[in-house]
Length: 398
Image (cartoon, rainbow, N blue to C red; front, top):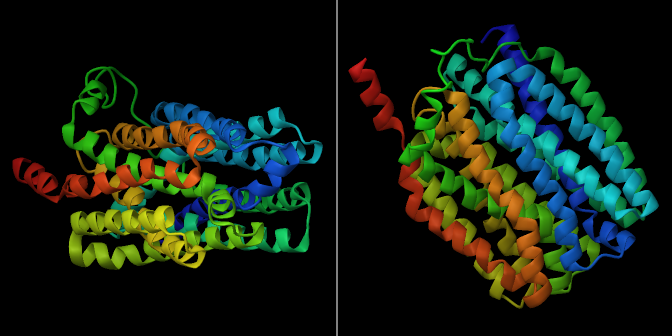
């Protein structure tokens, strides 16, 4: 691997790590933010809807922007928006402003959504160049960031550090990471050549929506994104309100979830190389369903907290494995990854307000039955991610 590719790969690690530490920093402080805003569970669902709305806007724009301008400006612009949004959320917490916090979360989601497709397209290009399975490890860096961010969040909560000072410090750290990493992302990756005959224009894009295998992969991403997003949005509050834990203990459980996600993603390459995508995704879905089942139905807070580890392991590989598979289902990789990521982001759009509405009426624990149903269904769809036969068949026809 040459020096430029090595630095590019390291930069991608940082671009996955940065949103992780940024997201978990405010997720671990959601009980404190809720108290500052004096919001109910249902109101928090609508506040978090700002994140979902921004994510959907960003993800819908990302594929087109990447196809037109390449990955570098989209990654750079999206990440810069994430950094700026942290400052807005910090200011909103300082003045106890619901609209300001919601606007900050919307900007955060837009930045993450816009950068998400671009950074994954760039990562699949690195996979092609190096011939190594890279996406699970890169997504592991996101999870590692959530562990680091959650750890600092717990420390800040225990020390009684106000939310706005905590998030202001994370803003400065994130800005430094961004300015360092953006230099090593090359221009032009993912951009399509202009002209009516280019892939991804006019004639070929509608065919992406007609690819049944791609839609099944999207359904897997939808289920796993809902599992991950539900934990990111609600797990601290679920453990505090649903199992009677303290705020610090609820954040600690979330840290365990993030650590399990990290372990699953960093160890995923080993299992993928030996057992294949289908078995790994099916085992992940079963693990996630088991964890959710215990969290929902167990009245033992210790057992429920431990079960979160199964939840995290189960949710860890579905998203990166499905995105990698989506890029292999046919031509126009950017459009295919964009489509699957968009389907997955539907979970972020409807998840927070939907679960918040159900939680307001029946409690957060029963609300998680929706997530359990989706995750369990992913086990039956797992064979869709095995694209090797299709790739081999295409090679033989060529």
